[in-house]
Image 1 (cartoon, one colour):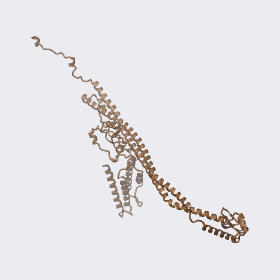
Image 2 (image 1 turned 60 degrees about the vertical axis):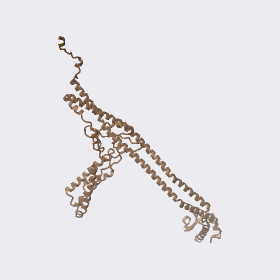
Image 3 (image 1 turned 120 degrees about the vertical axis):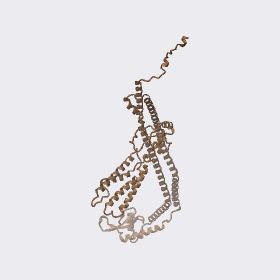
Image 4 (image 1 turned 90 degrees about the vertical axis):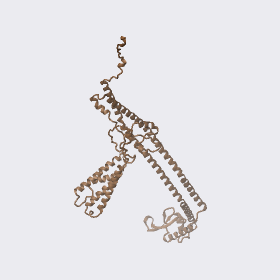
Length: 523
């Protein structure tokens, strides 16, 4: 009975004693805190290289777009030159075909002339000079002429007067031989030279009267065959032109396709490398977020561990920096890059689809103004997927256009207004201009010169190439007319008529149009 009423004491076991969690030592908490801060700091340093990578990828895409534009332009030039060569060849062949009929007539006429000349020559060669045929020329003069090579009507052409051989004896009569040179026969002067020429002219008239008037049939047939063969050859060349042009076009297309294929292969390789690198950055960003979450949980659980770690903890918990949103796109083979690919706004596709999906895990990287390469966005909190959709889009005129730069013609207004800011504009010669007018016109020209330089210089660089903003030309025209109108108001010869007011109205309209177009484009 006594044993049943005696209280029993329970001895605690070692397992029950260790069931309650023991708080870590302060040294262990500080060590863990330093480890987390160091890990966050290391991950952040590695992630800082993403900005440079994305901008380098932007430059790569713009460079590829320029290469494709140059390839397309070169292909267009080759096609245009081929079309021009074909048009010139066709025109030349048609022109030569049109000249075949006159050519046949010309050849027949030339052949007839040759035939008549040969007939006249044979006839004159057969007309021999004999004694008694020419008045005053006997057998002795006939022998003397034969000794000098003149025995027929074909041996001489004409007679003329000249100084005697040796320069003595005055002028004598010379007979010009057909073979060249002239001879003088003693005894043949004016009274015998004229009958001799009359005899030859009569022989020539008889020979021309006996010469044929038409070509023989065989000769006409031979000329017709030559002309017809030329016509067939030209028509064959004309028929071959389309086939030759098509072959040249196919060759140019093949060369262009091979060039595009090389560009596509290089782009795909670069896009694959960029997607892998972007996936590494995405994974690193997720790791950094996990470390920041772990650090925040550690701070919430154990609180402050000392004044020396507060600054490091606050720096470690800073939001992630923003970087340009660039997703490399893989274009279809032999297809030009789209505008979205050139500006780096589309996602990876095709062979890089998996890498592109891995790169899309990290969201909230806002786009930056590509026309300002030196721009670095200020740090902002890590955005959620919903917040990334609300980010402002880049303005259309802020995106550079590959291969399109502001023209050199803008140097004309820049130089003009620069000189105006130094020399003034519209200042009357008589009496000079008021001080306020001289200062005002120079300041206006200087301001416009600075604004044009600010707009034109970045748009000439290949990285930020773009056309001049809309309305700039209207603004320049308005300022020019305004300066001219101000000078006309001060000129005593023009301030009384309506010309200054008309120029002022046109200047105001031009300024309003330029401002409206500029503000509309910005809006």
